[in-house]
Amino acid sequence: MFADTYSATRSAPSLANAYRQVGTETGVSGASPHKLIQMLFDGFQEAVAQARGALRSRVIEAKGRAISRALRIVDEGLHAGLNMSAGGELAADLDALYTYVALRLTHANLHNDEAALDECVRLIEPIRSAWAAIGPQVNGVRQ
Image (cartoon, rainbow, N blue to C red; front, side, top):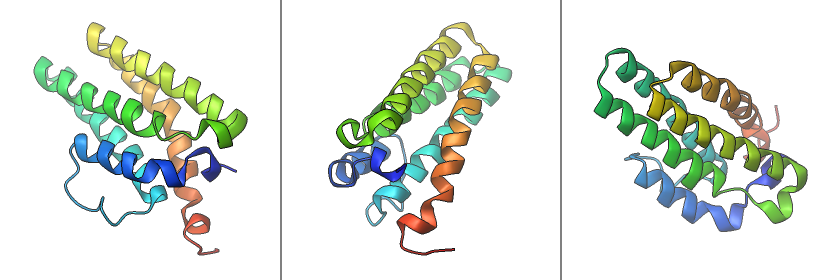
């Protein structure tokens, strides 16, 4: 159910390209579509943590770069990888979630709002955890 929300045939090359654009250097070319999505979630968490640190240190340029990276991951990776035709209600809900997270990231960037960054992490973390939990089933390993 959850894995059907992402298009395996359509999204693997586009997800690989999106992740390359947001700065990953290794592991993309041989990764499964499931692993690519996991890498995007991990990259999102890392980018938001970097933005939070830069915001606290008042390094505005670094904050902007980190938030821009998080936005690209959401928009060009997670959001673009949704399979709206096969994903049904779950895909529609994720579409709305990713749109909202992108808006909150933009708000955080414009207003130096750490609480908005925290909100984005809180919203994405359950999806990230669920995605990691289905990994063994998607990769054919039953636990």
